[in-house]
Structure formats: C-alpha cells, structure tokens
Amino acid sequence: MAEKEIVLSGIRATGNLHLGNYYGALSKFVRMQDDYDCLYFVADLHALTTNPDPDKLHENVRNIVAEYLAAGLDPEKSTLFVQSDVPEISEMYLLLNMHVGIGELMRTASFKDKARKQLGIKSDSENIESQIIGSDSNKRVNAGLLTYPTLMAVDILIQKANKVPVGKDQEQHLELTRRFARRFNSFYGVDLFPEPENFNFGGNAVKVPGLDGSGKMGKSEGNCIYLIDDEKTLRKKVMRAVTDEGPKTPGQPVSQPVENLFTLLELTSTPEIVKHYRDAYADCSIRYGDLKKQLAEDILKVTLPIRERILDLQGDDAAISKALRIGAEKARERASKTLAEVRHTMGIRKF
Ligand code: TYM
Image (cartoon, rainbow, N blue to C red; front, side):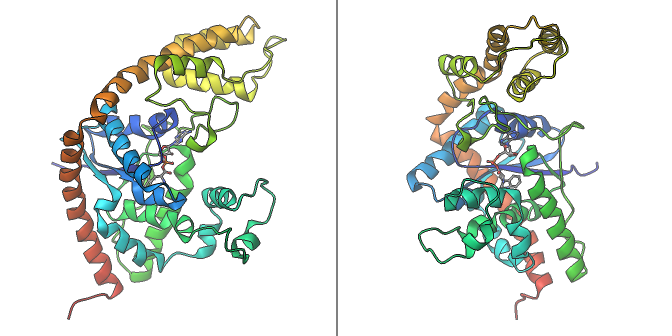
C-alpha cells in the first residue's frame, strides 16, 4: 500500500476560533483526516510573539484543543499536539535561522503589519525599517516576531509535510517555507525536505471576510463570529454587519461590505439560496435584513453543534490531556528523526 501523504497545520493560541479559522483551516483539517497522515497542533510558541498573559496563554491552548476536538478532529485518526511539547522544533528553529536572511523576513507582509502594531504606527506609508532599528527602547519589535516564518517553516519541515491546509493569509509564509527547504537542500546537496503546498480540495485559498466591511475576519480586528458565540450574540453580530444603502439600478456592481456578506453566504448556504439573493441584488429587490437573517440561520447550523461540544469538552481536561500526550509522543518521534538528519547534515556530530 502506498504511504499516505503527510499533512500538517496549526493555529496560534491567541483566542477562540472564528469562522476565518474554521473555513480557512479547521474544516479542511477535519475533511483530510481519512485520506492523509495528518498532524495538527496548537502553536503556543508562535503566540508568544505578541507577549500574552501567561495564564491566558495556557487557557487559550486548552480552548483550542477543545475546539479542535469539538469540530471533529479525532485523536485516533490524527496526531494532535502542542507545539512546545516538541522541543525538537525549538532546536531546529535555531539551526534553520542560520540560513534565513533578515531582509527576507522583514519584507513579509505579516511582519510589517505586526511590527507596525508593536511600534504603534498607524499608516502604511511610513518607513518602518528606520523605526525598527531606532534607539527608543520602549518601542521595540521583538526578534521572535521577525523569525516567525522560520519557526513556521520548521513546524512543517520537521515533519516533512507535503500538504499544509491554511487560509490565504498564510500563503506568503508557505512560499518562504518552500524557499527555505530548497535552499537547505541545495546548500548541503541533500534531498531532505519536500516542498509543501497549500491544500484546498482543488479550490482557491480561502479568505473569510469580516462583518465590518473590511477585508479579513481576524481576532485583532474585532469583526469576528466565533464558533463559541451563543445564538443571541451571533444573530446580533450578523444583523449589525455593515452594508450600504442598497442597489439603485439593475446590475449595479456590489460594494465590498455587501460582497463580504455574499462570500459568507457562499461558505455557509446552499447554491440556490446564494443565487436567490444574488438575483435579488441584481434586480434591486434585495432586503439586506432578509439576507442577514438567512445568513445568521445558516451560520448557526454550522456553529451551534460545535459550540455545544466545545462547552462539554472545556471541562474535560482528561480527554484533552490524553489526546495531547499520545499526539506529542508521535510528533516527537518523527521530529527527532528529522532533527538528527539536520544536525548530521550541518556537521553537528558525535565523537
Ligand atoms: P493563525 O492562528 O493566524 O490562523 C490559523 C489559520 O486560520 C486561517 N485564517 C483564515 N483563513 C481564511 N480567512 C480568514 N479570515 C482567516 N483568519 C485566519 C489562517 O490562514 C490559518 O490557516 N502561522 C499560522 C499558524 C502556524 C502554522 C504553522 C500553520 C504556525 N505554524 C505551520 C501551518 C503550518 C497562523 O498564523 O495561524
């Protein structure tokens, strides 16, 4: 029997999971479990790049594991673990950094974005490089944030993963991972790492929009629908979503905030319902209130059963720690093999 391809992905422990995490990542994790050799983890080391409260970090790790299980990840089928339970990752992160350029890290979009936040810079146009190097010690961008893509590449390469299901916002990090893999292989003349790719069941990478008319649903944007939201909260959020004054002439182009609602509807509803509202927009008969009610209904069908299971699992530390213990062992076993190869390749050898 041919060996199954290796799938690996993770989510940072920075808060509850929202629809962006679900459609961009978690729902794919669940669907891939039967056909691939899957490893899924909670990225607690990555969460440290924004200096979280220690108790909160611990709680977030537990919540994400509960959310993984509640959404349908099965520890019998997939390897589930917490990133910091695999110390081999931290060692390989140090080793791989020797082949990563500061410039290429500084140019990544997510670094620029988060560095701006750490420095308290609002505008896109300001030159952040000089401020990063600047001498004001109260305003610093931590080195962990810069090397975030190295750590992510190591998560992937240490398991020799072929497929990495992630949302659109992570594609630049995947591109870097491929570059680092190629660079390592060619520098040492080895064939150690495969080049991983995003996976979307043949479709395009997913970008779930926010409810505030902006581009992306994100934890720090305050525009999220969470899997854990109760019915009332969720309905209220959807009903308050930003729209516009409505189409005035047939066939008028759709504004960004309304297109966002259609995108959410496409993710959660049937093609017939989507067509109904698209047609209603095109002939100017649409009522956004109806669209929103429908959208809330369809989102609730997805999230409410998951919410119930999350609430059950959050108090079940035994189930969580059992899944993680078995997962960490499996993940470590494979990671330590790769690390041994990397050490040997780089010349760190025993006498
Ligand atoms: P994080 O926690 O930011 O996001 C977790 C996953 O959710 C996806 N996602 C979205 N997808 C579509 N639309 C959105 N609005 C949206 N918001 C979030 C992200 O694309 C991601 O797939 N760096 C990763 C964590 C990580 C990782 C890895 C992933 C660390 N090491 C190795 C894969 C492999 C991240 O930012 O997660």
